[in-house]
Length: 325
Image 1 (cartoon, rainbow, N blue to C red):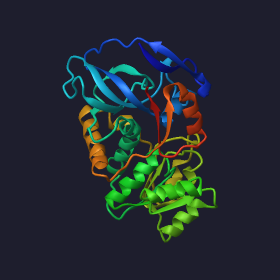
Image 2 (image 1 turned 45 degrees about the vertical axis):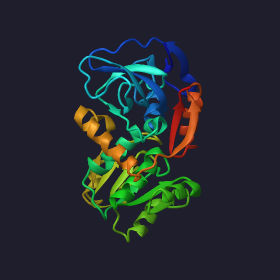
Image 3 (image 1 turned 90 degrees about the vertical axis):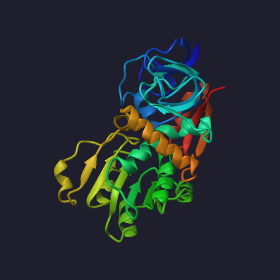
């Protein structure tokens, strides 16, 4: 049996229930993992609220790290006793242990702690695909990154610095802006202090940025488009302020023949070999010291509702983990 956080109805954090569920043995292509730490992400909020509906009741959570306890038939890249981490479907990471598909579970090097592994996989793999698999970016390019002091943002700030890319961040307080700057952002704009899109134009001498990486959604969409240079790429990869409302695709032409995409990590990691390659790239960045994983908050598994409340209230910085006792 494993203590597991589930929801039986979509809604607020009060929907969480802690139950003991049987674990079982892994089948073909599966592993059983004893989890040491679990990551918290905005996709968890979207699933809990029903923005991303799922069949209920269901266990929650997409990201964790731990030790492989059992391996099913056909699994060759992991063995019993291995340290491992993942960001993967289906939800169910808010648990002491679980059986799950093995394809997106990745070896975790000894030099990376379980907490770091749980805090970095979904966020770090997101940054990997944003910078290397979404639109061509090269040294000297400039990107605008919203929520630069969040878990994804702080990794992105460091990643951009390591690649010679200028990152302009936005955040909601001066303290968060300083945190982004400390992690490698070239500039960070407090979006509460006036017209941030105009400030982006000032910082780029009126040229605009090569790409916008926007997980905020509705509140920043129009300003993000106005921050791009001609032929720039708008990458909308989240909905923290709500989904982007319908818009006239024709406006992209007069604004400079802009491009727009709405990617998801699960497309990029859907192929086993690609997922393992991306995870190795991320781990190499962390082991080299190019990226340090900032864990800003820790909660016990039993306090998962409090963790969600803090995340939704934008009271968090860096990554948040649930500790498994």
